[in-house]
Length: 267
Ligand code: 9D3
Image (cartoon, rainbow, N blue to C red; front, side, top):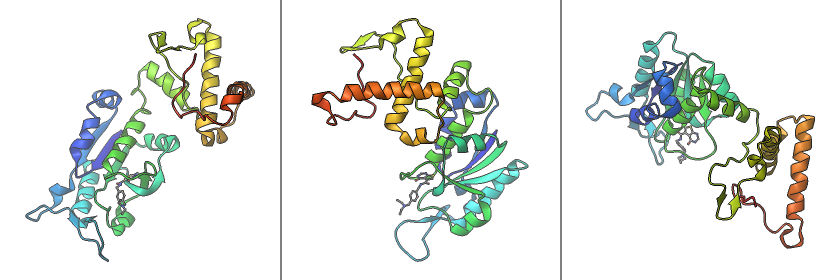
């Protein structure tokens, strides 16, 4: 997959490509990323890339000419160029379904904005899709471009090793992950759940699925609502819920101590 990124901070993007899964995808020739800096297309003495907003107010807007020339340069570097995606808070929220769609494209052009954003007419004429990575405020589009590139790269055939692929497959079935443990067997009185030490692989698989269902039920009911459960899964979740209610219904803690998200200790 070829991705061209238009950004005022190319080093931010290039850094991701030096490490881990994304770095390996580049080494293996699965991912090819090029960066394009609008500052290189600014021709005035100060190489200006921002301008004041019509209507006044605080903040600046990315200047049209350097950005438009840069997009055209990026497009003519690879034929056909692929769709142009503008990363912006106003975009379609990225989720794993969106990542899957984007990963099927052979080429993408990503536009990362700075300041208050880009001229609306540039969006209309030059941009095919707008994507957000969630409802929080970033300082620019680069972190969003990194998130998108990272998530998409993981779906390119050959990017993950076998173990990573297996783990990815189980996440992609729409549930949160089960808890994980490694040595030592006990930390400050917290022991590894006995079933994981039992060597009973069927019981371990059941326990993991039950924990995944239970945590999704507790922490992300929105995910559970979108996912049909098999009869086996319904039984495992019912089992989790019954145990959970037994453990919270005793006199002292009834309704008083909600689980702190992410904090649990098994005896
Ligand atoms: C005056 C209100 N603004 C500044 C606080 C709006 C604003 C402009 C530019 C907010 C963020 C940004 C920069 N953000 C991105 O470029 C961005 C982004 C994000 O902030 N959140 C989630 N996804 C994305 S994708 C690009």
